[in-house]
Image (cartoon, rainbow, N blue to C red):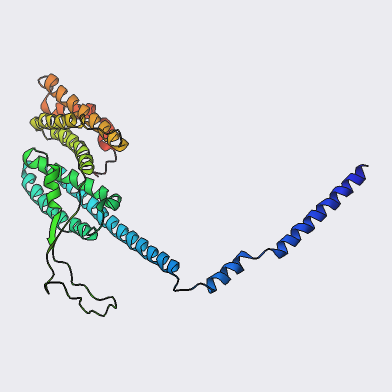
Length: 312
């Protein structure tokens, strides 16, 4: 009985396997059908032409996006270097030279790299490419606001920075589609007219840059203790406190990244206030050179060695 059941099962399996083999022989090979369909495609088909146009548009957009990313990367690197330069101006003898060099380099950034982004964005929706260059925007805002604070202890307004990104230029003469260099006549005048272009600075990226600025001001405050310039510590702390007060009125429920920035800002302010407190309470008890070392170690600890993109 057992043997009969085993044989019946075996016979049934072979029959099903045979049926599967028949279906496999009758089924068309996908590769062959695709090859046949490809050979029969009409190159003049409206559908095919439409998809080719879509492909060209996507390639054009991706190429533009990558070019803007590379420009933004150069802006970020140069902005970091400018911030590092400004931190080196602790001594009064180096201050004038450092500020002058920083001003020149910041102006060069706005007149070259940001202008290159503006040209890329001409005729485009700038917010469609914002993710390609917002890191450079925020780093530049951090650098230019840090420079402005060192110059006159003020904060650059968003509108003042946006004005730096507005340019006028004369576009190049266009050529025909054949690419043989034949110039297309310009309507009304043979000379191209000057056009206005700009790199958009969204307010949120300005706010993010200002939030990063507070980290540099915290370092400036702590470093001023090492040089014996105690008045700078109190002044910088008061300035950051005003910035923090302004951030408390910002609604950031839809931007979690801004919430983390605010948390870092709060921590930086706490370190600065702790330093100012130690200066006020223990300033008459400990010699100035020992006081600066003690406060720096207590207020900052190992946090000053954190990997911060705006300082290192």
